[in-house]
Length: 409
Image (cartoon, rainbow, N blue to C red; front, side):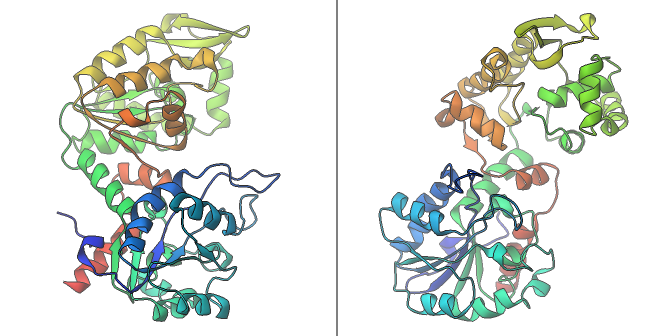
Protein backbone atom coordinates (compact mmCIF):
# COMPACT_ATOMS: atom_id res chain seq x y z
CA UNK A 1 0.00 0.00 0.00
CA UNK A 2 1.39 3.42 -1.00
CA UNK A 3 2.61 5.62 1.85
CA UNK A 4 2.07 8.80 -0.16
CA UNK A 5 -1.08 10.58 -1.34
CA UNK A 6 -2.02 10.99 -5.01
CA UNK A 7 -4.36 13.16 -7.09
CA UNK A 8 -7.12 10.71 -6.18
CA UNK A 9 -6.96 12.04 -2.60
CA UNK A 10 -7.53 15.74 -3.32
CA UNK A 11 -10.05 18.11 -4.89
CA UNK A 12 -8.23 20.52 -7.20
CA UNK A 13 -11.14 22.49 -8.69
CA UNK A 14 -10.41 26.22 -8.62
CA UNK A 15 -7.25 25.55 -6.54
CA UNK A 16 -3.79 26.94 -7.27
CA UNK A 17 -1.65 23.85 -7.78
CA UNK A 18 2.16 24.03 -7.86
CA UNK A 19 3.37 21.14 -10.01
CA UNK A 20 7.06 20.14 -9.98
CA UNK A 21 7.73 18.34 -13.25
CA UNK A 22 10.90 17.20 -15.03
CA UNK A 23 11.03 19.05 -18.36
CA UNK A 24 14.83 18.70 -18.58
CA UNK A 25 15.48 18.02 -22.29
CA UNK A 26 18.37 17.61 -24.72
CA UNK A 27 19.49 21.03 -26.02
CA UNK A 28 21.45 21.85 -29.18
CA UNK A 29 24.57 23.63 -27.81
CA UNK A 30 24.81 25.84 -30.91
CA UNK A 31 21.20 26.93 -31.47
CA UNK A 32 20.03 26.48 -27.85
CA UNK A 33 16.88 24.80 -29.22
CA UNK A 34 15.25 21.82 -27.50
CA UNK A 35 15.87 18.63 -29.49
CA UNK A 36 13.06 16.43 -28.10
CA UNK A 37 9.88 16.61 -26.06
CA UNK A 38 9.62 13.13 -24.45
CA UNK A 39 9.53 14.27 -20.84
CA UNK A 40 7.35 17.31 -21.55
CA UNK A 41 4.90 15.08 -23.40
CA UNK A 42 4.83 12.49 -20.59
CA UNK A 43 3.82 15.09 -17.98
CA UNK A 44 1.49 16.90 -20.38
CA UNK A 45 -0.55 13.85 -21.34
CA UNK A 46 -1.02 12.69 -17.75
CA UNK A 47 -0.80 14.98 -14.73
CA UNK A 48 -1.07 18.40 -16.40
CA UNK A 49 -3.94 17.36 -18.66
CA UNK A 50 -5.84 15.88 -15.71
CA UNK A 51 -5.38 19.00 -13.58
CA UNK A 52 -6.61 21.32 -16.32
CA UNK A 53 -9.61 19.08 -17.02
CA UNK A 54 -10.43 19.24 -13.31
CA UNK A 55 -10.28 23.05 -13.52
CA UNK A 56 -7.18 23.59 -11.39
CA UNK A 57 -5.02 26.70 -11.75
CA UNK A 58 -1.79 24.97 -12.78
CA UNK A 59 1.61 26.53 -11.99
CA UNK A 60 4.56 24.62 -13.43
CA UNK A 61 7.95 24.42 -11.70
CA UNK A 62 10.76 22.78 -13.67
CA UNK A 63 14.51 22.88 -14.31
CA UNK A 64 16.59 22.82 -17.47
CA UNK A 65 20.30 22.12 -17.25
CA UNK A 66 22.54 23.51 -14.55
CA UNK A 67 23.92 27.03 -14.19
CA UNK A 68 27.13 27.34 -16.19
CA UNK A 69 26.31 24.46 -18.57
CA UNK A 70 25.40 24.82 -22.25
CA UNK A 71 21.89 23.43 -21.69
CA UNK A 72 21.00 25.97 -18.98
CA UNK A 73 18.31 27.98 -20.76
CA UNK A 74 14.96 29.64 -19.93
CA UNK A 75 11.75 27.60 -20.10
CA UNK A 76 9.98 29.65 -22.79
CA UNK A 77 10.51 26.92 -25.43
CA UNK A 78 9.24 24.29 -23.01
CA UNK A 79 6.05 26.29 -22.46
CA UNK A 80 5.57 26.57 -26.23
CA UNK A 81 6.07 22.81 -26.65
CA UNK A 82 3.63 22.12 -23.83
CA UNK A 83 1.07 24.35 -25.56
CA UNK A 84 1.46 22.44 -28.84
CA UNK A 85 1.11 19.06 -27.13
CA UNK A 86 -2.01 20.07 -25.18
CA UNK A 87 -3.40 22.18 -28.06
CA UNK A 88 -4.29 24.96 -25.67
CA UNK A 89 -2.65 28.23 -24.55
CA UNK A 90 0.11 27.97 -21.96
CA UNK A 91 1.32 31.13 -20.23
CA UNK A 92 4.99 31.76 -19.48
CA UNK A 93 6.65 34.33 -17.27
CA UNK A 94 10.41 35.03 -17.22
CA UNK A 95 10.35 35.22 -13.44
CA UNK A 96 10.40 32.59 -10.71
CA UNK A 97 9.10 34.13 -7.49
CA UNK A 98 9.32 37.92 -7.97
CA UNK A 99 6.46 40.34 -8.50
CA UNK A 100 5.93 39.32 -12.15
CA UNK A 101 5.56 35.66 -11.18
CA UNK A 102 3.27 36.44 -8.25
CA UNK A 103 1.02 38.65 -10.38
CA UNK A 104 0.81 35.95 -13.08
CA UNK A 105 -0.19 33.34 -10.49
CA UNK A 106 -2.85 35.61 -8.94
CA UNK A 107 -4.33 36.32 -12.39
CA UNK A 108 -4.65 32.63 -13.34
CA UNK A 109 -8.14 31.39 -14.08
CA UNK A 110 -9.37 27.85 -13.46
CA UNK A 111 -8.12 25.43 -16.13
CA UNK A 112 -5.23 27.70 -17.14
CA UNK A 113 -1.52 26.79 -17.12
CA UNK A 114 1.44 28.96 -16.21
CA UNK A 115 5.10 27.96 -16.62
CA UNK A 116 7.46 29.81 -14.27
CA UNK A 117 11.13 30.42 -15.04
CA UNK A 118 13.80 27.70 -14.68
CA UNK A 119 13.97 26.89 -10.93
CA UNK A 120 17.76 26.67 -11.20
CA UNK A 121 17.93 30.44 -11.71
CA UNK A 122 17.41 30.44 -7.92
CA UNK A 123 20.98 30.06 -6.59
CA UNK A 124 20.02 27.95 -3.56
CA UNK A 125 17.89 25.48 -5.57
CA UNK A 126 20.60 22.85 -6.03
CA UNK A 127 21.81 22.86 -2.42
CA UNK A 128 20.55 19.72 -0.68
CA UNK A 129 18.70 20.11 2.60
CA UNK A 130 15.90 18.70 4.74
CA UNK A 131 12.32 19.64 3.80
CA UNK A 132 12.16 21.87 6.88
CA UNK A 133 15.38 23.68 5.92
CA UNK A 134 14.27 24.12 2.30
CA UNK A 135 10.88 25.47 3.41
CA UNK A 136 12.69 28.51 4.83
CA UNK A 137 14.16 29.56 1.46
CA UNK A 138 12.93 32.58 -0.50
CA UNK A 139 11.53 30.37 -3.26
CA UNK A 140 9.16 28.54 -0.91
CA UNK A 141 8.36 31.55 1.29
CA UNK A 142 7.26 33.55 -1.76
CA UNK A 143 5.34 30.89 -3.70
CA UNK A 144 3.76 28.69 -1.02
CA UNK A 145 1.35 31.38 0.31
CA UNK A 146 -0.13 31.69 -3.20
CA UNK A 147 -0.80 27.95 -3.60
CA UNK A 148 -3.31 25.45 -2.22
CA UNK A 149 -1.52 22.22 -3.16
CA UNK A 150 1.92 20.90 -4.17
CA UNK A 151 2.14 18.06 -6.69
CA UNK A 152 5.50 16.37 -7.17
CA UNK A 153 5.53 14.65 -10.54
CA UNK A 154 9.32 14.74 -11.09
CA UNK A 155 10.42 11.19 -10.26
CA UNK A 156 13.51 11.67 -12.43
CA UNK A 157 14.72 14.34 -9.98
CA UNK A 158 13.48 12.61 -6.82
CA UNK A 159 17.00 11.57 -5.81
CA UNK A 160 17.79 15.25 -5.21
CA UNK A 161 16.89 17.01 -1.92
CA UNK A 162 16.60 20.30 -3.81
CA UNK A 163 14.38 23.20 -2.73
CA UNK A 164 11.66 22.72 -5.38
CA UNK A 165 11.61 18.96 -4.76
CA UNK A 166 11.15 18.87 -0.97
CA UNK A 167 10.72 22.45 0.31
CA UNK A 168 6.98 22.78 -0.28
CA UNK A 169 5.99 19.53 1.47
CA UNK A 170 6.18 20.87 5.07
CA UNK A 171 3.99 23.91 4.28
CA UNK A 172 1.46 22.71 1.67
CA UNK A 173 -0.75 19.62 1.25
CA UNK A 174 1.43 17.46 -1.01
CA UNK A 175 0.68 14.56 -3.35
CA UNK A 176 2.36 12.53 -6.08
CA UNK A 177 1.51 13.30 -9.69
CA UNK A 178 0.65 10.55 -12.17
CA UNK A 179 4.21 10.12 -13.54
CA UNK A 180 5.64 9.90 -10.02
CA UNK A 181 2.90 7.45 -9.04
CA UNK A 182 3.38 5.32 -12.16
CA UNK A 183 7.16 5.14 -11.74
CA UNK A 184 6.91 4.16 -8.07
CA UNK A 185 4.28 1.48 -8.72
CA UNK A 186 6.28 -0.09 -11.55
CA UNK A 187 9.59 -0.01 -9.68
CA UNK A 188 8.00 -1.33 -6.50
CA UNK A 189 6.55 -4.19 -8.52
CA UNK A 190 10.01 -5.41 -9.51
CA UNK A 191 11.77 -4.65 -6.23
CA UNK A 192 9.27 -5.68 -3.57
CA UNK A 193 7.22 -8.49 -5.11
CA UNK A 194 8.74 -9.54 -8.41
CA UNK A 195 7.39 -12.64 -10.08
CA UNK A 196 10.18 -15.20 -10.30
CA UNK A 197 12.36 -15.91 -12.17
CA UNK A 198 13.36 -12.23 -12.04
CA UNK A 199 16.20 -11.27 -14.40
CA UNK A 200 18.24 -8.07 -14.12
CA UNK A 201 20.19 -7.08 -17.25
CA UNK A 202 22.92 -4.51 -16.65
CA UNK A 203 24.84 -2.99 -19.56
CA UNK A 204 25.95 0.32 -20.98
CA UNK A 205 29.12 2.35 -20.53
CA UNK A 206 28.35 3.70 -17.05
CA UNK A 207 29.36 0.74 -14.94
CA UNK A 208 29.91 2.66 -11.68
CA UNK A 209 26.67 1.47 -10.06
CA UNK A 210 26.68 -2.10 -11.40
CA UNK A 211 28.30 -3.63 -8.30
CA UNK A 212 25.95 -1.94 -5.85
CA UNK A 213 22.82 -2.80 -7.85
CA UNK A 214 23.91 -6.43 -8.34
CA UNK A 215 24.75 -6.83 -4.67
CA UNK A 216 21.44 -5.32 -3.54
CA UNK A 217 19.14 -7.32 -5.84
CA UNK A 218 20.98 -10.61 -5.17
CA UNK A 219 21.36 -10.16 -1.40
CA UNK A 220 17.69 -9.20 -1.07
CA UNK A 221 16.68 -12.19 -3.24
CA UNK A 222 15.00 -9.81 -5.69
CA UNK A 223 16.87 -11.05 -8.75
CA UNK A 224 17.15 -14.69 -9.73
CA UNK A 225 20.15 -13.79 -11.87
CA UNK A 226 22.06 -10.83 -13.29
CA UNK A 227 23.10 -10.73 -16.97
CA UNK A 228 25.92 -8.38 -17.92
CA UNK A 229 26.69 -6.62 -21.18
CA UNK A 230 28.46 -3.52 -22.46
CA UNK A 231 31.26 -2.08 -20.33
CA UNK A 232 29.61 -3.65 -17.26
CA UNK A 233 30.41 -7.09 -18.68
CA UNK A 234 34.01 -6.08 -19.28
CA UNK A 235 34.47 -5.06 -15.64
CA UNK A 236 32.87 -8.31 -14.44
CA UNK A 237 35.06 -10.37 -16.80
CA UNK A 238 38.14 -8.54 -15.50
CA UNK A 239 36.98 -9.46 -11.98
CA UNK A 240 37.07 -13.10 -13.15
CA UNK A 241 40.75 -12.54 -14.00
CA UNK A 242 40.06 -12.49 -17.74
CA UNK A 243 42.71 -10.41 -19.53
CA UNK A 244 40.70 -8.39 -22.06
CA UNK A 245 43.76 -6.99 -23.81
CA UNK A 246 45.59 -3.69 -23.44
CA UNK A 247 43.12 -1.30 -25.18
CA UNK A 248 40.18 -2.65 -23.18
CA UNK A 249 41.98 -2.79 -19.83
CA UNK A 250 43.33 0.72 -20.44
CA UNK A 251 39.77 1.90 -21.14
CA UNK A 252 38.57 0.50 -17.79
CA UNK A 253 41.46 2.23 -16.00
CA UNK A 254 40.76 5.51 -17.81
CA UNK A 255 37.11 5.35 -16.71
CA UNK A 256 38.27 4.58 -13.15
CA UNK A 257 36.31 1.30 -13.10
CA UNK A 258 39.10 -1.03 -12.00
CA UNK A 259 38.42 -0.02 -8.39
CA UNK A 260 35.18 -2.02 -8.61
CA UNK A 261 37.02 -5.27 -9.34
CA UNK A 262 37.74 -6.42 -5.73
CA UNK A 263 34.09 -5.98 -4.73
CA UNK A 264 32.86 -7.74 -7.87
CA UNK A 265 35.28 -10.63 -7.19
CA UNK A 266 33.72 -11.11 -3.75
CA UNK A 267 30.20 -10.92 -5.20
CA UNK A 268 30.98 -13.51 -7.90
CA UNK A 269 32.38 -15.85 -5.23
CA UNK A 270 29.11 -15.46 -3.31
CA UNK A 271 26.86 -15.83 -6.38
CA UNK A 272 28.84 -17.84 -8.98
CA UNK A 273 25.73 -19.24 -10.71
CA UNK A 274 23.56 -16.13 -10.50
CA UNK A 275 25.96 -13.68 -12.18
CA UNK A 276 26.24 -14.25 -15.94
CA UNK A 277 29.05 -12.84 -18.07
CA UNK A 278 29.57 -13.22 -21.84
CA UNK A 279 30.89 -16.48 -23.31
CA UNK A 280 32.00 -14.66 -26.46
CA UNK A 281 32.50 -11.08 -27.59
CA UNK A 282 32.41 -8.98 -30.75
CA UNK A 283 35.44 -6.81 -31.46
CA UNK A 284 36.19 -4.24 -34.14
CA UNK A 285 38.91 -5.73 -36.31
CA UNK A 286 39.97 -3.47 -39.19
CA UNK A 287 36.56 -1.80 -39.25
CA UNK A 288 34.65 -5.12 -39.27
CA UNK A 289 32.71 -7.08 -36.65
CA UNK A 290 34.66 -10.13 -35.53
CA UNK A 291 33.41 -12.54 -32.87
CA UNK A 292 35.87 -14.23 -30.53
CA UNK A 293 35.57 -16.76 -27.70
CA UNK A 294 37.03 -15.93 -24.30
CA UNK A 295 39.93 -18.31 -24.90
CA UNK A 296 41.04 -16.00 -27.76
CA UNK A 297 41.65 -13.21 -25.24
CA UNK A 298 43.60 -11.01 -24.69
CA UNK A 299 42.86 -9.04 -27.85
CA UNK A 300 44.42 -5.97 -29.36
CA UNK A 301 41.00 -4.95 -30.69
CA UNK A 302 38.30 -2.94 -28.88
CA UNK A 303 35.36 -4.92 -27.49
CA UNK A 304 32.12 -3.50 -28.92
CA UNK A 305 29.36 -6.07 -28.31
CA UNK A 306 28.45 -9.45 -26.87
CA UNK A 307 28.80 -12.42 -29.22
CA UNK A 308 26.23 -14.80 -30.76
CA UNK A 309 26.67 -17.59 -28.17
CA UNK A 310 26.06 -15.10 -25.37
CA UNK A 311 23.05 -13.65 -27.18
CA UNK A 312 21.54 -17.15 -27.44
CA UNK A 313 22.24 -17.98 -23.78
CA UNK A 314 20.79 -14.67 -22.57
CA UNK A 315 17.73 -15.25 -24.79
CA UNK A 316 17.17 -18.66 -23.17
CA UNK A 317 17.24 -17.08 -19.70
CA UNK A 318 14.95 -14.21 -20.74
CA UNK A 319 12.39 -16.66 -22.19
CA UNK A 320 12.08 -18.32 -18.77
CA UNK A 321 11.71 -15.02 -16.87
CA UNK A 322 8.51 -13.62 -15.39
CA UNK A 323 10.04 -10.25 -14.42
CA UNK A 324 12.78 -8.43 -16.34
CA UNK A 325 14.67 -5.21 -15.59
CA UNK A 326 17.10 -3.83 -18.19
CA UNK A 327 19.36 -0.82 -17.75
CA UNK A 328 21.98 -0.23 -20.44
CA UNK A 329 22.66 -1.62 -23.94
CA UNK A 330 24.75 -4.74 -24.61
CA UNK A 331 27.20 -2.95 -26.90
CA UNK A 332 27.73 0.06 -29.16
CA UNK A 333 24.25 -0.26 -30.67
CA UNK A 334 24.56 3.09 -32.50
CA UNK A 335 26.94 1.31 -34.90
CA UNK A 336 24.92 -1.17 -36.98
CA UNK A 337 27.79 -3.67 -36.91
CA UNK A 338 27.57 -3.82 -33.13
CA UNK A 339 23.82 -3.46 -32.57
CA UNK A 340 23.13 -7.22 -32.70
CA UNK A 341 23.49 -7.86 -28.95
CA UNK A 342 21.29 -4.95 -27.91
CA UNK A 343 18.66 -5.48 -30.62
CA UNK A 344 18.40 -9.25 -30.02
CA UNK A 345 18.17 -8.85 -26.23
CA UNK A 346 15.51 -6.13 -26.47
CA UNK A 347 13.51 -8.09 -29.06
CA UNK A 348 13.58 -11.13 -26.78
CA UNK A 349 12.28 -8.98 -23.90
CA UNK A 350 9.60 -7.47 -26.18
CA UNK A 351 8.45 -10.97 -27.19
CA UNK A 352 8.35 -12.15 -23.58
CA UNK A 353 5.13 -12.35 -21.56
CA UNK A 354 7.09 -11.24 -18.49
CA UNK A 355 6.61 -7.85 -16.84
CA UNK A 356 9.49 -5.80 -18.27
CA UNK A 357 10.92 -2.54 -17.02
CA UNK A 358 13.52 -0.55 -18.95
CA UNK A 359 15.39 2.57 -17.89
CA UNK A 360 18.34 4.79 -18.73
CA UNK A 361 18.77 7.22 -21.61
CA UNK A 362 20.67 4.88 -23.97
CA UNK A 363 18.32 1.98 -23.22
CA UNK A 364 15.30 4.11 -24.11
CA UNK A 365 17.00 5.42 -27.26
CA UNK A 366 17.75 1.84 -28.38
CA UNK A 367 14.18 0.73 -27.67
CA UNK A 368 12.86 3.61 -29.76
CA UNK A 369 15.38 3.01 -32.56
CA UNK A 370 14.32 -0.63 -32.87
CA UNK A 371 10.59 0.25 -32.69
CA UNK A 372 9.91 -1.71 -29.51
CA UNK A 373 8.45 1.00 -27.24
CA UNK A 374 4.92 -0.41 -27.22
CA UNK A 375 6.09 -3.92 -26.38
CA UNK A 376 7.98 -3.12 -23.16
CA UNK A 377 5.71 -3.15 -20.09
CA UNK A 378 7.13 0.01 -18.56
CA UNK A 379 9.80 2.47 -19.71
CA UNK A 380 11.15 4.68 -16.94
CA UNK A 381 11.97 8.30 -17.80
CA UNK A 382 14.43 8.48 -14.91
CA UNK A 383 18.20 8.15 -14.89
CA UNK A 384 19.92 8.73 -11.56
CA UNK A 385 16.71 8.33 -9.57
CA UNK A 386 16.07 4.94 -11.16
CA UNK A 387 19.60 3.75 -10.38
CA UNK A 388 19.38 4.88 -6.75
CA UNK A 389 15.97 3.22 -6.39
CA UNK A 390 17.39 -0.03 -7.81
CA UNK A 391 20.18 0.19 -5.22
CA UNK A 392 17.58 0.28 -2.45
CA UNK A 393 18.17 3.92 -1.55
CA UNK A 394 15.43 6.15 -0.19
CA UNK A 395 14.76 9.03 -2.58
CA UNK A 396 14.41 12.43 -0.83
CA UNK A 397 11.54 13.53 -3.10
CA UNK A 398 9.57 10.39 -2.28
CA UNK A 399 10.44 10.50 1.44
CA UNK A 400 9.15 14.10 1.59
CA UNK A 401 5.80 13.05 0.07
CA UNK A 402 5.53 10.16 2.55
CA UNK A 403 6.28 12.47 5.46
CA UNK A 404 3.63 14.92 4.25
CA UNK A 405 1.09 12.10 3.96
CA UNK A 406 1.88 10.81 7.46
CA UNK A 407 1.44 14.32 8.87
CA UNK A 408 -2.00 14.62 7.24
CA UNK A 409 -3.20 11.29 8.62
